[in-house]
Amino acid sequence: MVSSTVDATQAGPTRHIAGESKSPLAKFGRRAVVGLPLFLLAVWTFIPFLVTISISFKTKFESYANLGLVPQDPSLSAYKEVLADPNFLSAFLNSVIVGFGTAILTIIIGLPAAYAFARFRFRGRHLLLLFTLLPRLVPSIGIMVPIYRLAVATNMLDRRLTLIIVYSGMLAPLAVWLMVGFFQQIPRDIEEAADVDGATLWQRLRYIVMPLAAPALITIAVLAFREAWNEFTLVLVLTTTPDARTLPFALFKLGQSEGLSNFPAEAAFAMITVIPFIFVYTRIERYVVAGLTSGSGK
Amino acid sequence: MTATRERTQSPQTPDGRREYAGGPIGQSKATPYLFSFPAILAVSAMLAFPVLYGIWESLYRAPELGLPEDFVGIQNYTDMFRDPDFWNSLYRTAIFVGGCLAIGTALGLFFAFALFRASGRLRFMRAATLAPYLISNVAAAVMFRLLFQSDLGLINTFLAWFGVDGPSWLSDTTWAMAVVIFTQVWTDIPLTILLLLGGLMTIDQSYLDAALVDGATPWQRARHLTIPLLAPQLVITTVWLSYSTLTGLGVVLALTGGGPLGSTTTMAMEMYNVAFRALRFNQALALATFILVLNALLTLLYLKVAQKYEVEL
Image (cartoon, rainbow over all chains, first blue to last red):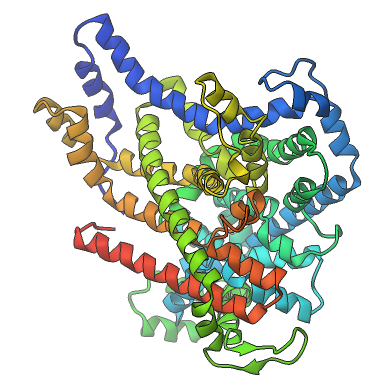
């Protein structure tokens, strides 16, 4: 895209010179110019989370009586209720299986293809690469009805395997795109040296390429897991019983139930689906951000 | 042998050697095809084929659910264009996409500038901004339903401080769309911010310094320097936001289900209703095809506009 370079060394001092001026009031003003938008960003991003966390620690009764952000008598009853719910447990298990399954299958599909596109010269290479990447632009509503009818016709409705296959297929373009870019950055010399020493293709892949590509593999695994963990509309269509339902569907069901809404249970359920992933993400944020921008910026 | 021929065919290939010294699999000319086959199969089976099959099936119709389908040509489309529900959903989609684009881009720019200036310890905000991207549409919908509860929600409690009697957002046919737009922007904005921030970081700082020396005000710098320099990223975020909202179903479905009284039924939602509530699959496929075409046309339009203003992507 834009090819001009980042010159980080210039940014600092210049701003300092510009900021050397005048009164404490001006100083405060400059701080506010930086601080206020950031504060608004924090409010925008975190208020929905805070409200949900707050309600999740209230009892059902308190959720109707106390509107404040701080629960008067913090209680884990909503969490206990959710964790004891068999629908939650089966959905959680399904989500874990579908999430890991999708991450693994996406890499199994994407890795060899990306390696081939990045390293081999073969006839039709560009056309095949384009054919693999272009469907990235297909939205899930475009395939929803056909996939549903295919699943019905092949008796694949309501199976975790169906979800894994569908998600992996949808993620394959992204995976190939990210890994091709990554493999091209790995110097050929290393592989050529190994080649001269008599390493087989498999050995080169196993002991050179894969360890070097670990950041890309982690990124793809995380993005694939995220997609499978969060995807909602296809799982709604492709499952009919709790056998294969994932967490978003179970949470949706909870919100649809009749009677007086159980806000704390909904909030606790939402937080339980969110927290593990945010925890994992904070550890590997670096890779994911890089992967996201290069993946969606094309 | 194979390798020698390969090399003479393309003498510029720097790694002809790899072709014959790669062990049992590596020797074969078929290796790259074998390697890329799973991905090509997966993409064909899960993306390319369903789309084409869906377009083809939109030319058929079953007289009754369960009966064999007859070829009806473009009748599903002509019926669709005569259906007032279609035009209503198109109108709501225009509001939805337009609203999300306007608010998403404006807020995205504002927040990207904010993050760009954040230094030192405040940099953690960059990572934290991504949080809404990491959660499911259903979880976001739960959060925003709690936030916009008519009697108990934080928004109305907040408005009450100023003596404003907030509406019952999600059961009001006007306000429900506003909440849906708001929620959709919330889930989509992390990527917008990330892309714009990436653009800001590639801008050559010396331009800004020169402007600073010439005494340009912050507004002038933003208006005449930064935003034009950000044009490529703005085009990309526009294309992406437009795609994401035009085809987005998760937020609407989880938050309002298209209600109240159909006031948030966008085209994607209408497609879902026709397919999975009315079970008129072929008609739904006509609508889905229309959405895909509209998306392609909009993308072309954005790129044309970008070309007109000589934005280099």
